[in-house]
Every structure is written in structure tokens, then in C-alpha cells.
Image 1: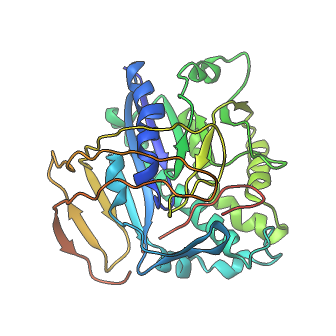
Image 2: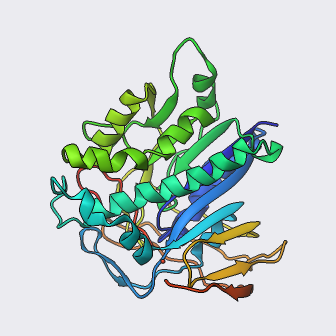
Length: 331
């Protein structure tokens, strides 16, 4: 059986809204066509409320346990405030921001790229240790806060397998803003690990000039000689308040049931809680009904369900991120 690793990064923030489409249009098609799928996540923990004026998100208290919905095989959770201090975000601002919102989008891009970098390193390390369980044929990078509106086509993998066309990566065919859309990337492990570790190139790039995330990605793909093909695969960004940012063909209703049992949880930041979940831990089934209204309105979230876990305290300090790869208007 061929294996696929799905990597998600950044804040889950709206996963309670987007999970039904991830399950219906990504996970189910892969499993139906005989692929074994594992999910790897990096996310941030936020202390207090979350606001993003550009995205019209204000004083929202995010659910730091929301990641459980995706049932990840491995997850890394870091405190966003700690990461900001560690990265010293000011050093990336030599030429200012290509977005006109007082560095908020710039900082979010840096945090998102770092998030992707952290979980990519983890998966690469596993692969180098020659563990048969982590020898994936393909790796899919995708945001957890998007509502998919079309089914993943496993025949796209054939494009990567065909040596004649020299295509090494697949990207969405929309919102590339003079570069390449950075919200999703599909590749074999060699190219996937290059893509996932572009954080290493981010600081040198920002010291030379200011570039949007899309332009930066296009330049880096060319630098590493990764030829990409744009595929017609659409999805909408969903904000933490349930608002749909994009307007690709929405579905009307979808019911979903959640079952989760993360196998390993790693929390890097001191002061956070390491939670060991039971092997067959399950959230009580919840019925999702996503009510699609007009632009600017919200989706209806599912009822909350309780979970239990054993906890151990780590000595030290606090966690969050915000992923906004929307090209010019990021947010």
C-alpha cells in the first residue's frame, strides 16, 4: 500500500468548520483509492484572545485543543509568544513589509513558514532513521483552516511519477499573485523537504528586498530547480469567526463525525502541558451543519464535546501562529 503524509501548519483556528470538507474531499478520496494516510501537524498555543484586524477577527478565544479533530499521528505545539522572541521578528524587517498593514501580515508569514519548517524537520528526521512506517511516497502540505470545495484527484500523483514531464511539485492554480500559491504543495519526499524548509532562506531573502510570500516561493522553487504544475483544486479560507474569505463554489450542507486518538504529542515550549491521550480516545460524535450564507456571514460551529487526558507539567514558559498565505491581501 502506498503511503501519504499530510503536513499542516499554523493556527488551526477554524478547523471545527473546515474538518468536514477535509474529511470528505481529502482524506476519504485518498483512503478510497488505497492510500495509507498519516497527518503531521505543527501549531501554536495562544494565551488570551486572538485578533487579526485585516481578517476581521477581533478578540476571539481560540480552542487550543482543536487540533484533536484531525487525529494527527504526530503534533508539535509551541507557544507563539516564545517563538516570536526566539526568532526576533524585527530582523526580518530591513526593507519593510510588502503588505500594508503594519507588519502584521509579515510577522504571520514568518511564523507560518517557521511552523512548516518545524514539522518538516521532524518528519525528515523520522525518514532518515529508516523507519518503515514513515517511508511515504508523497507528501501533501495543506492549511487546516480552509474549506475544500472539490475532491482530491489521486491521479495527480501520476504527474510526479512521470519522469518525462520533469514536474516535481503541484500547486493550486489560483491566487498566485505573480508568484505561486503557497497554501498547498504536493510532492515526493525529496522536493517536499526542500519546500518545507524554506524558512532557512527567509531571513537572507528579507535582507535583500521585500517580497510577498507568493513571489518568494516562486523564486525559491526556481533556485532549487523544482518545476511545478498548477492544478485546478479549489478551497476557501475560513476565519476563526467562521467567515469565508474566498468565494469558490461552496457546498450547502455536510454532516461530519469526529473520531480522534493522537498517537504522539510533543510540546516544545517550557511551561506548557504534555498530554498523553488514551490509545483509543474518541470525541463524542458531533453533527456538523455548515450553513453557507452570504459574504461576511459565519458558518455555524458544531456543539462542543468533552475530552479527557492525563497531563504533566513542563517547567518554563507559554504558545500560537497565524497562517495567512493569501498573496497580496494576506489575512
